Image: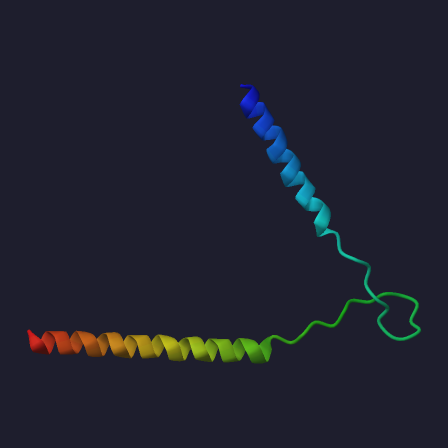
Length: 78
């Protein structure tokens, strides 16, 4: 029973100590000389996302083409 309690204490301590690193630093000022902080401008993901989707569709269609070609060759050879 003592081993279980020790394990739980260590587990909870390590789990809780990882939350300390989740704090964010303060945001820099939005413009030179500005007094307040505003939301930072995010990077656009549209171009990269479109490229990834096109590459994924191309790769999927290539795999489908090869699998169908292989299945056709196997059925013709039998």
